[in-house]
Length: 467
Ligand code: 8LQ
Image (cartoon, rainbow, N blue to C red; front, side, top):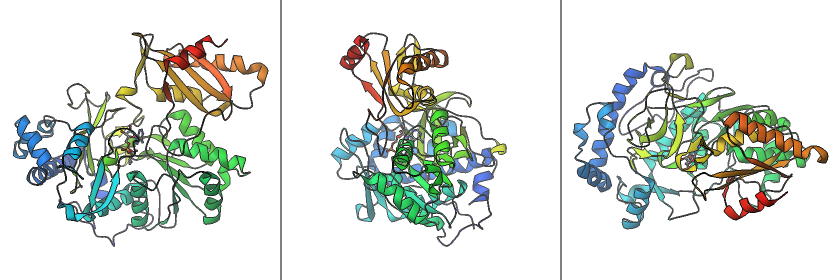
């Protein structure tokens, strides 16, 4: 039984036959134009609901001269002003604790999560029971598409605190009938224990960040286990670029000998609506009937053509407590038109989300994103497991050094090894960079999202003065 209603309501006893490829075949495979018509209708309902229940939206749209009834096409919808994260933060400071974009009565809020960022005022997610259940149902659907089934044991290996990603994975796995193992991450010494428990509990599916999976593989080896022998069938990721960055992806596939799926968007718009294109292929699909995604020009916030790069702007179609209507991500991606060849008729992001607009730097005229450097560096034989990208934005032109850990590279060849990476950076990305080899385990490993970019002029000067 397929459901697609506003407000969302799902038959909690429904589950497809094990062999069925699609959880909701009609919603997932219908012609994209037909789905867009239904989405337009849903957008109107969601806007109407927000207009009536969330003063934040009424104020914002009043100022812009927009009323939900004026949205007659998806092109009209592009005129709705985007919502920035700073606006949400400011609104929440003024209307504590959940902001005036809370559209449900405060007494209905039954779950609190929050932004995982460590800087600035955190924002709280107030989630009612209806949204909690729709996220569970949506995630079950997306995870079903990753091939996760009731006989799987799913390890949630990211922090089980404020981070929505962990809870989304938890309730999604639970809803599809799998066994859930909320081991979490982030406690000292936890990773070695994770490895042991994974073996003992027969974990078959991993959820976490790509950085953490690579760290886990290193720790497993240190503990005497081959990560490929841990029994994982699949790993799925959100939180940072990696699962669609070729060198990172192949490191994970090689280490665990398992399928890798990219997913994730922003916690504010959970459920994540993305899913790897297929087994062991990078890229993600936009599940438009859950979260309507527009890849937009970062200047005009209008949709760019398929084939072009832009920033995702998200609209939740199933959230009633804090609906997000045109939330600006500030991320970067390129999208492609829906195609029936992919099975699901959703737009496709072939390289996933590969950066943030504000992460971009310019070296000798070339625009560079850190994930492109990750891709080159991590593809090198002898890569020791971590690196740092040190940039200086002192002058008009940024300058760049990359400190790269090496492992199993003979001391006498270390300089030429680093030279080889510098050559590859120049030929693949067109940038000149100083590559500084450093010993294995120089840098801390992360159990959550990696922070590899160091914006530090003094460090750069010291590196430049190193012979
Ligand atoms: N971000 C998140 N997922 C990403 C991915 N697959 N590829 C590249 N960048 C990604 C709970 C959500 O599923 C994921 C999440 O991490 O939410 P947050 O904590 O709100 O962080 C959102 C940001 O993480 C995005 O804007 C991307 O920059 C990155």
